[in-house]
Image (cartoon, rainbow, N blue to C red):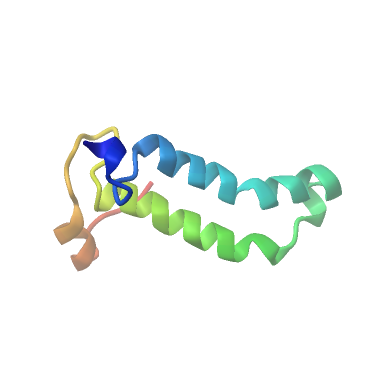
Amino acid sequence: IPMDDPTLISRQQLFARIVGGLGGRAAEEVIFGEPEVTTGAAGDLQQITGLAKQMVVTFGMSDIGPWSLMDAAQSGDVIMR
């Protein structure tokens, strides 16, 4: 059962991680304004981008269907839009 296995992560949990990871960047925009956004969120953005890519390419969590695009991604043929 997925609820009993701590290694399984739902799509909703992954989206929550993405939203949480963007919190620092959003806070900078609110507090300092868009012109004063810093490079401080670079690491967070890299992690979030990697997670989003895994969701689509590896886990099949996209609108195109439950397909793993891992073979195509390894050859560099997948275009992320």
